[in-house]
Length: 289
Image 1 (cartoon, rainbow, N blue to C red):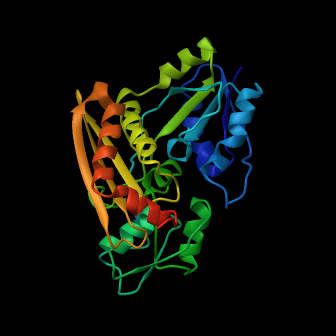
Image 2: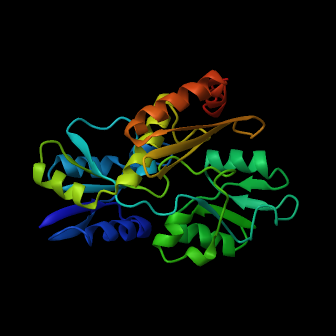
């Protein structure tokens, strides 16, 4: 029996089951996360990494946007299933523009906070944490007037009707949002072949471009960076934005090229953004300026 590991949240197990259903003779194994909220995003992958290296699971399924750039030795990428809708969604209102002056919009994301400050300055953001169900409950209880969540998470939990998608050309999603990443142990050829079985070409190319941008920028979960790659036949277009934490300034750029150069395009776009001042904006996010 192939053991497929996932975190234990409702969203993580829901998205993992979609992959398990496509793999022959596979079962889902829940691995509880370790780490505290003050740590970096590696806290989301650490327990799955260890279970994989210890042989307790054969495949680990991650939300791609939670996977750090530096991966442990002995762990390799296997594939990227078809991407869910990468856009952000607003819950509790039809749009940001429809909200009243000084309405409270809940989010814990530096990217979303900066985007709201930049493009919807008439509202204010308030800290909103927890899983999808918890955030929606807090919204219903009046802790905020609206909340921004990933549309992919809402869709995977059967809650898509509770959110309205935001325009990604303005409200650029997080790099990797809506994508899953399958990882396995290096040298496990059988598992590698299974990963290829569920790999979706366009989704994998888009993720490669977005992750290479993040790595080249040195961005992380504390920085306000959005990126979205889209594949059309043999071309890939990558849009990205870097913002100051308060949304007072931002840099937006785009690059298009052949799909064979997906990762290179991310690196090239990062160079363009840095030449325009992205390093200074990222430093502000880290409290270094």
